[in-house]
Length: 307
Ligand code: NAD
Image (cartoon, rainbow, N blue to C red; front, side, top):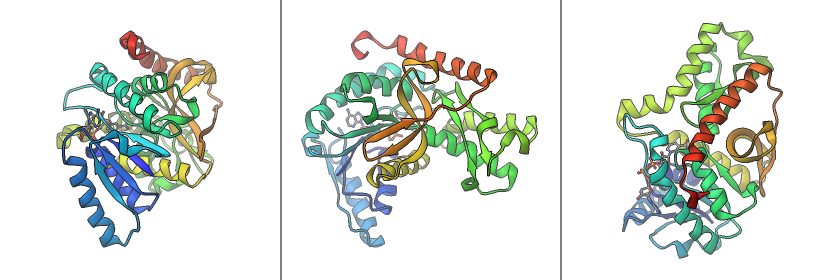
């Protein structure tokens, strides 16, 4: 069973994509009475219409997640227009620490995926509070940041985003580090296919994408994260050994330790199977270090009880 904690916009979008893919039965948990039950009922009707053979239920009781092999955490406050992900830090750390206790109690063998912002710092809190091996604690966002890079590049190149392997490293936030030289179309780097001006435009659009959506419609993205969570859960459920960009607790990779950063990694039935270290040049190493510094500042700013 897949448990999704937080039956808000991201949680329910993720459930919808997972239902369409028939990955497993889904449980939605939320603290708001009746909300997860209502969302589950609507999604169950959608599953019936699409002819999908899975069960979707809602609950306000964490006990119901007992035995889940995957727990997706989308609980927390989202960004409002004009608000940075960083401002969410204190508010959401408390929620993540509480949820970590529930996961330890009811789903101690699960693989945990997390979206709550500020993502890298919240994944750090979750990892520290759970005490699970790092292979089973994964921060979601790299699939989204990279997916956005592929989207904006595809429009300039007039080529399907599916033909682009996009690389974004570091922080999920304003300090994210897109790497156009290592983002390729059939092996050709974007830097060889586009002008420096076009690449700078794509970089800016990618970094601003979340903010752009929030400013246009008044609330942050949910379909992109929902789709990304579904493909990551699929890779775990089907033991696909598939590579993604995602946030992981680093133990020396790229020269960083005791920090969570977006890196390329391989997902399978046991969670993170390995982290791929890309051959960064000196300029890129510097860019990643600056991005990591922004994450470190957030981790340093966490109250001691969350570390
Ligand atoms: P939302 O407000 O629509 O949903 C959040 C839900 O969490 C609410 O229903 C709320 O009741 C619930 N909740 C709060 N505390 C809880 C608890 N202790 N246990 C169970 N449920 C709890 O927000 P959203 O748009 O779905 O966003 C959720 C989170 O994901 C936010 O922190 C947002 O910033 C983040 N986000 C991350 C990414 C990413 O790429 N990592 C992308 C989009 C949004």
